[in-house]
Length: 424
Image (cartoon, rainbow, N blue to C red):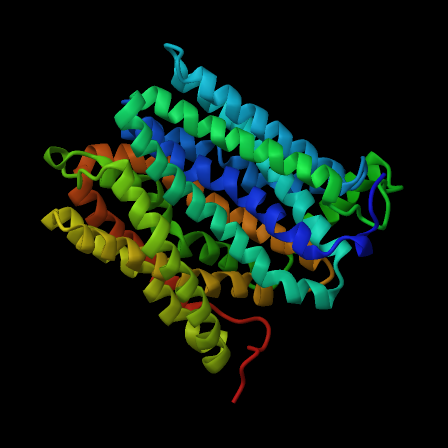
């Protein structure tokens, strides 16, 4: 008994759907790095394995056509939310085991596969149930609640973990946090079972498996026939290359003792910085970037967006060199990171939409581009722990500054296939 799309207001399901999309991604990408750090796992192992398990978000375009063939999008949304919740509970119980790291990484890999599949089905629900006008109307809610999940995880849950550590110890504290996440995902999944509308086009696609594979191959070939495509692929990989190195290391750097070139922050302090001022800076940066591009046009704005995107790495280099004790100074670096990310990432997103995706298979080609972009973050992330261990935090961030040079050079010379939206 599924409600028709028109019977359920988007306010009832869009916020919860995108909150559920953001939660597993952020927990795997950032929160687990702090969990493992507190439990004594080395930086190299943390960075490598928590980066590798993000691979499904890169490869998800490869199995997206098959979700159209079996069941409804709602079925996969509910299934993956509940599956992710069950797996987070398994992570909680596995933390007590002697070989907890290998077991929990394996379970987190299942969550990553489930989360990537959830993203396909959730975006599919959003696009198929809502009209173009409704999609535009609710896009702000979509982005807001995805980032609320990020705030709740890196801010609230990390802060809560620090509080629990003082009372119960590291292992039990993180067990409680994982069980809270599990409960959230299961409750949201049950809620969506009753509330989420079903795609009005029906559950099945009449194409056979061989026809779907042939269509996928045709879409793939046409993607690589686009003008400037290999330059564009280098561009979207290098644009976030430096970020890929620092994404896993920054939380470890904030947590590491000062005797090891870290800043020695507690989980509460990290959660406070990420969940309040950092989150606000991200939203402000994203909004300002939108107005900035609207005023100047993407082609004129792209290089300056890339500069702002890479500014936080200068701030972290200074923090690593001087190791300030002031939480205001450290928080200022985190604010700059989030502002730069929010401001600069908009340019890359719009470039993929306006220069890479246009054509017969716009949605699929955008998915390919975003998947390759994630690969450009994942690969340096896998290497970041080993590089950090070899160089130390101080020299590591200096190394990252040199990694920004290719990004800025390729952005300066990037060609535009289609006319910029802003012309004078």
